[in-house]
Every structure is written in structure tokens, then in C-alpha cells.
Amino acid sequence: MTVILLALAAACCLGTGFVFQQLAAQHAPPQDYLSFRLLLDLVRMPRWVAGIALMVVGMALGAVALGMGDITLVEPLMATNLLFAMALARRVSGQRLGLTGWAGLALLAGGVTAFIVAGQPHGGHRSEVGQLAQWLIMGGVLSVALLLAATAKRERVHVSLEAALLGVAAGLLYGLQDALTRISGLRFTAGGWHALLTSWYPYAIVVLGVLALVMVQSAFESAPLRMSLPALTAAQPLAGIACGVGFLGDRLRVTPVALAFQAAGIAAVVTGIVLIGSHPAMPPGAGASEGSRELQPR
Image 1 (cartoon, rainbow, N blue to C red):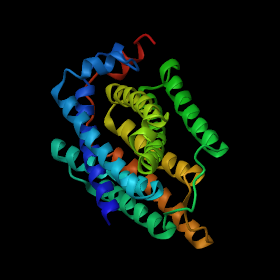
Image 2: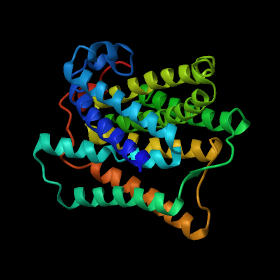
Image 3: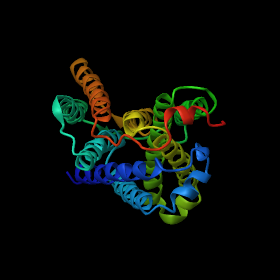
């Protein structure tokens, strides 16, 4: 229960922080798109700083939850950050939920519940950290994320597609970051600060966090929140679960009925995320118009 409460508290901070960040990022200069200069411009905006502070608190709570529980349990719960983002966005916009909003909320909450109850995620007797599976899965997740970001940067695609691609890329990096956070927690528990700081994991966490942050803020700058946050929220738990099962030793029930409910739960989560993210209550983004963004140099 403690792990569940920590993960939900982390989701609340993350969802609220994402809304604050997008409300600020939509006013950033278009030429900062996918550039580290974007962070230098945004740090001057109090609303963005508040959003980042909430995100840091959320990540810290998520790290504690990951240290106490399994990533296959924590990740689906943290996907509920979209519920809290929706609640704040609805208050700001004054929009009613309507059928689409309520359906999205029910699918997201029900899907998370179905996955956890059917899968009964738990840690295995050993993990595969340092083995071939770890490098293959980490390399695959990182490669896909960078490829999506490169496509959004170089190809003349529609700005809403750019935002979705960047959302997926950032979500994959955040999921990988969560897996490395879990490993770092295990190393700290086993050997203290010396064991942690003499490994490469905490430094990789920082690098992944900065890369994902640039991608997220570029997505928030270029298009409405509904174009990027659902993609981010859906990709992060999928990457985290892949890492958890693939090399962290997490286990799920594998009976036919359990697998069917797990698949249905994941499908419901993704569908609910899309429905909530497309709701009119989500901040529409008042930054550069699509036409002007398409003319910006790459």
C-alpha cells in the first residue's frame, strides 16, 4: 500500500507539473526547438520553474516507490499522472468532462487495476543486470527514442505528429531512466554511496533526464498538450515494464487468462490516455501556429 500511495503521489506531482510546463513552454521562441537553448529560455519563466519543481518532487517520490516496489507495479500507477493533469487542465479551461472524458478516466483507471490484479507483478529471485538482455533492451529502447527524435527534427512532418513523436521518445527515455533508478537503488542498498557513485548508472540517469526534458519541452512548445502528453504517458510504462520483465527480474502471471487480462488492461490504459489527452480541456497551446512552425529552419 505504501508503494501504491507513493506512486500515486508521484503521478499527481508529475501531471500537475506537466501542465505548468506546457503553459510556459508554448511561449518559448520557435528557434529553440530541440535545442538546449530552450531550457535556458524557459528557466526565466516562474511558471515553468514551478512545473519543473513539481516534476522533480514527482520523480523523487517515484524513485522511492521504485526502491520499495517493482517497476512493473510502479510504472502503470505513475501513468495515472494524466488524470491529475486532466483535473488541473479542466479547472483552468472550465470545460466539462463529458462522455469522452469520463470514458477515458474509466479506461485508464480500470486498465491499471486490471493489469495489476491479473499480472500480480512481483520481483524474481535474481535480475539480469549486466547481462546481454540488459544491453539489448536498453540499446533498443534508446535507439528507438533517438530515431523518433531525429525524425521529428529533420523530416517535414505535421507539427502534431512531431509532438507525438517527441512524446513517445521522451516517454521511452523516462521508462529507461526509471529502470536505471531501480538498479541504482539496489546498488545503494547493497554498498552505499561508494557503490552507487562508482557505477555509471546515476550519470546515465542524469543524461537521459536532460535529453528527455529537451524533447518534452520542445513538444510542449510546438503543439497543444493533447498532442504530446498522451504519447509520453503511454510510452513510459511500456518501456518500464519491458525493462522490468526483460532484465530486472520482475515477474508477471503467465496463465492464459492472466495474460489476456493484462493485455486488455494495457490496451485500456493506452485507449484511456488517448481519450483524455484529446479532451478539449487540455491546454490548446497558444504558441507558434502550425503554419509558422512549418517554416522554421531545421
